[in-house]
Image (cartoon, rainbow, N blue to C red; front, side, top):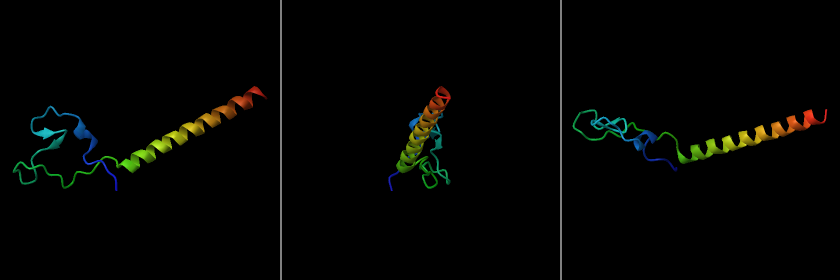
Length: 76
């Protein structure tokens, strides 16, 4: 499936010299390799699209309820 390759926190430069974006540069055995075995992406692309669509649907529902509210109170 489509997915973001690295966690979103990697986009932020870290001030710590021993880590890159909050992820330690040393592996479990301490030999200096980047341990990427347990790093999962924050959200896949499909999840981001789904969250955006839910956001748009919620906005549309709120707009419709607001229009009904205005119509109900203007004509009663």
